[in-house]
Each structure stands twice: as C-alpha cells, then as structure tokens.
Length: 560
Image (cartoon, rainbow, N blue to C red; front, side, top):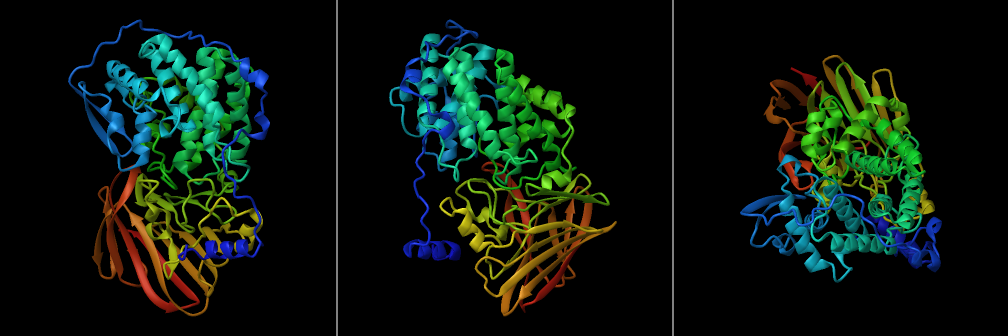
C-alpha cells in the first residue's frame, strides 16, 4: 500500500467519508437473469443424444505426458490420479488439470484411453463435494465443454449414465455460482459461464440451461466487447480466446437450430473482424496477459489460414478451427481507426509495423488483463520482431505488469499509469486522471500525449512521437515538469545484443539494427513469454540518465 500513492489517497478519502461506494463484490446472478423457484424445479431430466462407448475404452498402459499451463506432467498408468495430487507452485496449473484443458490441445497425440482413466479418477475424487477450486464456475464450464467435445469424437468417458448425471451437476453448480460481481467488476468469466450452460444444455437437451446460457452470452457481449468488436480487457491473446468461445457457442447453437444462433453468429463475426488488426507481419504481439487456457500458438493458423495446422492443434474440435478460418476469410476487417476507438493502435510505414495499446480512459482495464505500460509498443521490420512486448508468464508475476519490463519511459521508476482497483468508481478515476491519453496520426507516424505520471508531482505531461523513415525510426520523448530525476527509456528485444560505440547492435534472422539514444545502454537478460509459464530469453535495453525536467530525448533504431 505504501508504494501506491493512488491507493493511499483513496483510503484517506474513504476514512474521511468522501468515497462511499459499496465494497460488496460477492458473486450473484446478473439482474437480467432472475428466475423463480418454479423455473428451477421445471428443469427436465437430461438426455444424452451423442455417442456412447459402452465400455469401449481400454485401461491405458505405460506412461503419458500431460501438458498443463507452465509445465508438463508425466503420469503412470498405475496412478493417473496423481495429476490432481501434485503440489503445483501455480494455482493455474492445478486448474488446468481440473479443466481437462490438455484434452483439446493434445492434437494427434491424444489417447482416449487416458482421458477415460483420468476422468474416472476425477469423478471418484471430486464428484461428492461440489465446492472449492475444482468446482469454480469457470473451471466447471471449461471441464464440461472439453468432456462434451471429447465425447462427440470418442463417446462419453466413464459410465455413460454417471457421466451424464455429473455433467448435469456441472450445469447446476455453474448456474448457482455465476460470476457476476456488479456492473463495475464483472469480467469475461460470466460470458464463459453462459457458454458452459449453453453447451451442457444442448448436449443434454436441458432447455432451461440452453435459454439462460444464450441470454448470458448475448448480454455479456455488450459488456466485454467494445464498439470496434475488440475485447475491452487490454490483452491481444484474450481477444482471440473469447472470440473462440463465442464461435464455439454459435456453432453449437447453429447445429441445434435454436433461435439465438443468429445473434451469436453476429457477435462472433464482429469479434473476428477485429482479429486482423492484432497481427503484424511477424505474428501477433502478446500485449497484456497471456491466458493459461490455450497457448498462443493454438491460434497460429489465423496468420495464414493453415487448415492442416488447425487440425493438428485440436483433434477434438476441428470444426471450431475451420469455422474461425471461414469467418475470417469472409468478413471485412475493421479499419485501424475503428480499432483505435477502443485503444488499439496499429500503424505501418516503410515496411515497419507497430502495435500499441493505450487505454482510452488512462487506466488499465479492471477487470481486465492490461498492464501499466503507457507508451509501450511492439515493432516489426517486415517479418522480423525487433521490439516486443514480453507478455506475462504468470498471474503472480507483478514485475511483468509494470513499465520496467516494457518499451516505455519511467521517471524515478514510477509507473506511467496508476494501478486500477475494483473499488475505484468513475468519479475517483476521473479525479486521478482528469485528462485521457491522446493518440494521434502525424505525417510521419504517431504521437501519444499524456498529462502527468502517477506518483511524480513534478511531472506535468509526457509526449512520445514515433517518426518512421525508410531505413530508421526515431522515437522522441518529451517530459514537461521540474526538478532533477532519474529517467529511463527501455526496449525489450528478442534479438541478441552487443554494445558497440555507445550503441546497442541487435542481431536476429541474419539481419542487424543499431539502437542508440545518446547515452550508453545497459543490457539485462529477461524472459520473453510465449505462453503461460513458458518463454525464451530476450534482452531489456535500458538508457538511463539523471537530468532536470523538462527532458527531451531521441531514440533511433536504424537498419544496418
């Protein structure tokens, strides 16, 4: 708390009675979904209309490897339940096991006998007590959908009647624990609760859950997607994940012929139309958090519509990938100007391509998956990534939320944006950030203007300009204010780096670039995350200097 001046200010105002908003963030049904006891009792008995195996699975032999968020686990056929007994250092790893998230990711390596064996172990251990993390609403929805998709290909695992009964319990648990936390703090989780209800309802012919799931999905689309069709949570990877979820819901609804299918199709199409703005020629920048649910490479087929790659990535639901590809090829991509309305700024010139996320209100989205990295960006030269966003390897890793790991500027190591919290209401946020960031087009590039930096009263304004040339890019930083301060400009690169003549020489893909800023750079090895818990080493290049404000500095990146 002592390190967060905004939180200190809010607490003081709260003590003085100036901040009176409710701090009740208990989950409850959304106001549009209040149902009566009569409707609850009207839920019919489940009827599974898909494939059944009647004992066709065999007992697995030997060992298998299960890929979970951040790690891979080797299991022996003698104890498949060990998957749930291990002491994982990250909660998301354990939740990935409980969600059976590894099933759609196994591709051609999927052995249905192992899924059957692990499902039986899970049922034996966790079907009696419907509480705790194994039965968290989001986790229950993911697990049910993954088992339903598996069953469509191979038949129901376990004893069919027991599995049908257990899937019905999943729907009940989800419905009674919907992740609605009020109008200020409800995230994409509620939409996925709806997806779980819809998919279970369709699989088991439970009309009440079909209707409620579709209503949630349609209502929440208005909350989580912006006018451009982009997710409003500050993460490029999460946009693809939630887009996939809506396509999945639409496909299931369309096959069943329910009336909500057309609306779900329209929502999916708007989200798909926004996908192209997130991809640069070298691939999609991982701006914001990386979801543990699905590795980014799962979506690599979107870069070129590679059907073969899509099939390999998910043998249990190839139709979902093909629908994604078909929709992407059919829709008209949104313009960069439309994406900019929701904070996503794509700009290209002279074979350079850049992408930056600037929250429209000057706050990282809350709830959301954005970072405190105002002024940061990713830059590609043709197909080569030069300056990258490092992503974030774990939800527990606060270092990768801050500007110190991004391509930004800091004054005395203070974050350029305040940390957002659910109990800050709109009036308090405007009090802290009275003027929103301004991102504008220029003849040679873009400019970003921002009034003040969090925690630095001496700073009046910050201005960054990108100027594109044929062989180089200039990044001009201007900080208005007073006093003497430590100023750091940082750039994260996946390239190898050598210091030469007071400059950083970047080498990758058989090419070289020179990065200079008028002061000698410092280089530190750091992880660039490519998936949740998985990454490769990159380099943070820092130009550090002490100086009086106002400050003006120029960073030059030039091809060699």
